[in-house]
Image 1 (tube, rainbow, N blue to C red):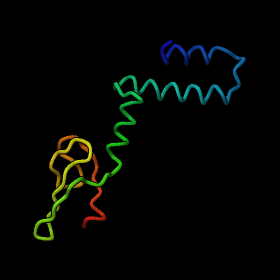
Image 2: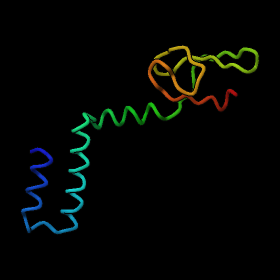
Image 3: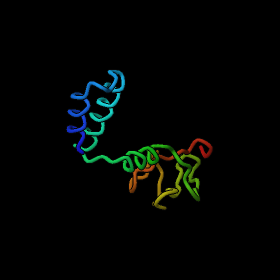
Length: 96
């Protein structure tokens, strides 16, 4: 059953308490928005993980100002707050 069909079903059945209807309809509309843009729960989890900063691997320090390391996810050379290759957020706090 598609979200729109489920919403219609819920709205038409009076045996479901109003507060449950409201929550169910709200959740289904949210799911419908995800479906429309092609976003899956797995993709949301992946995006959340990518946005959580990780410490870079095997870093080297040059001139006490430039940090160079390797992305913990894809091993790309990094020197910024995000890996340019895979988008992983990086945490340089203990390195700087």
